[in-house]
Image 1: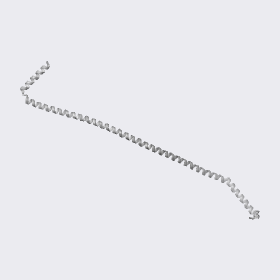
Image 2: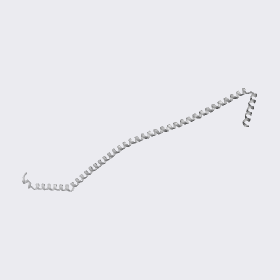
Image 3: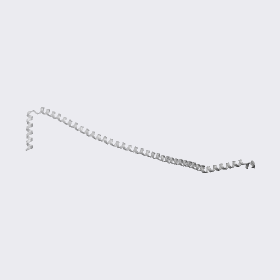
Image 4: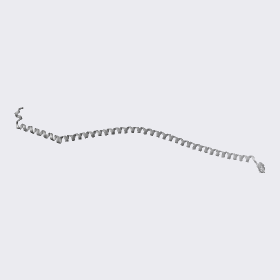
Length: 165
């Protein structure tokens, strides 16, 4: 490079233009660019902060959901245990109730059996008495003739008079 070129008015004008251009760029950068860059950086920082907050919320939600799942498992086990206990109690209660019902039926049947035995005994007794009465009448008709009958009647009257006297 030559010193004579440095004094050339075109070169000096270019240098001045360059300095004005760089000054304008620096002034525009300081005036608008920094504000835009700061605003953009703050927007990006806000997006990152929001994303981190959202992630923290989701992690908290996942933790809460895991806790709820664990609690649901515990509740499910408890519900199954309570259900089994209730089923066992219901079975025991139904068994006791069925046994009591069976005992009542057995007692009723025993009572019916006793009543039927009594009825049969009574009928048998009545039949036996009727047969004995019939045979006694036939026997009396064969054995007792009118003269023996008069003797028996007289003896009965005498016995009655003695007991009344």
